[in-house]
Image (cartoon, rainbow, N blue to C red):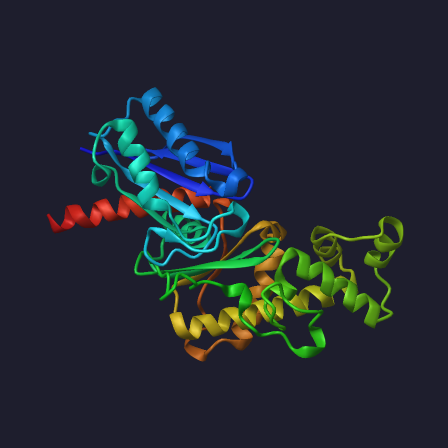
Length: 334
């Protein structure tokens, strides 16, 4: 019986791995080698997988496959398009990794299944399997970090969309003109990412402070340090700072608006909030849930809004689960 599965989460600075049997047995990482247009990335992934398999006694007879999360659109489980931070353009990542592993194990590529998907979608799948969405089969996950990403899982499977771009929650245009600062990185104006990402929150906070004269500890921090962070904004809000509370209320209003709109299309069992900004915890979750309920369709207002719980490991869990769930479906057919 093929009991082992490997999950891989490829990032711009490091690549995380998880070896799964009945549970997570081993996790490790290697730096992402983006030299020469990322041509070394897949060979180095294959090399470290082979090394770990030898250590744990895993061979072709008991390896069910490798799942891989990649920072770009993956419409078909294989070809990734436009991974700018890896130096990739139109790379058949799953097929190439399967061929590299087959060479190392002296077998045919079809003997080692490899599937790839967008990293945010994979993280959402991991949270569905063993994280904040464990009791759900259909969910939306929004990740608040340097940018705003997201993933959509329907009936236990990632929904990629026609070209692999489903889940680009950060580029939903939902911000009123009065609260927009500049253009989004995508070139549009009014994207959720402009106000709900870590960088967007800071930009909006500075904009708000410039437009008002409300006393705030944030003004003092700007005078002392010359800058503020997202954590500064949330810490001030938790301590009752009026300006910070107004800033956070505006940010979460737009986040609630975007999630209400997605929910009207997807009708998920739950909504998850992840990414670095989610470290603000229950304070953030409660405000997003409040604004979601205010703006959601009447039959959807009770959709649970939860925090993601797997953190940086969500990707390896979701990548592994792609293969585990595929094996389960095959077993059920047999």
